Amino acid sequence: MQIDTLTFTDFGPRHIEDALRLSRAAGWPHRAEDWALILRLSHGVVAVRDGRIVATAMATPFGPVGTLNMIIVDEALRGRGLGRRIMEEAMARAAPEEWRLVATRDGLPLYEKMGFAACGEVQQLQGVPARAEPLSAPGASGLDWATASDADALAELDRAATGMDRAALIAALLEVGRVLALRESGRIVAFAALRRFGRGEVAGPVVARDAAEAKTLLSRLATRCDGGFLRVDTTADTGLAPWLAGLGLAPAGGGIAMRRGGPVPASASHRRFALASQALG
Image 1: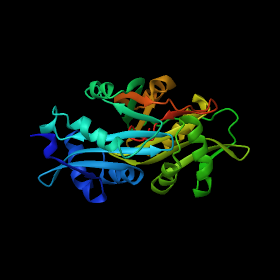
Image 2: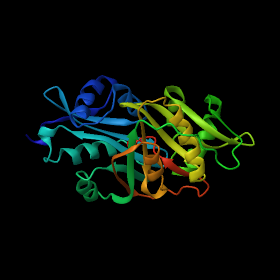
Image 3: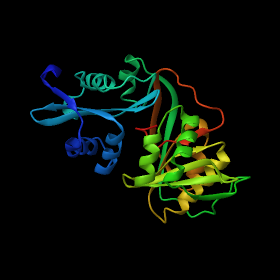
Image 4: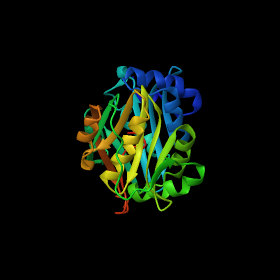
């Protein structure tokens, strides 16, 4: 089969069922609702053969940064250049200063050929958290659940930590999940989101000034899982993986953080201690 015989078209809600079939075949835990959230924020592409979707890719614009994600090719059609072609189709739908993605080891050679360079390691930990005493960061005056009125403050902290304008993502997380805010003199100084995903819940993004604040937020979220499944995607440079393992979350793979173009600078005041997801950074 030649790639030229395929049809490429914009990803729409009607394609989620077929995309879910592909992600399940690839061993991904995504639910239809997880696909829908990413689609809500993204420009997606599907490759169609004989009326059936055989590949997907999403480009998610976050201001000066775009993330490439949900890149799946039907197993029977791999090795024929379709992965590169559908990525190019997705990238043509946005023009950020910097592209970011999280690669598997298998996908690494293709992304390197397309000009992406490794810039870090993503560590996925998951499981049922052990019951532990919640921590408190020095100087923290209180924790509470953020509301829609806090959206601008949350987005500004996220922008400082990541260089991305993810106001739309923050608004969506406030709708579909909960965001725990750490306040100091009434001002939000750190936060962590919690939402349904895959087999249970995922914590992230987590944005804080230091690891003590990040641990305070994550320990509180872990206690609220009430014996349920929790996933956290962190990065090796945060040093959080051993601490998360101590909470009862087991390493479950991860990926290689990559970028092309940029890099878009972030502030030194805050950093990201956990990703919203490997798709959304």
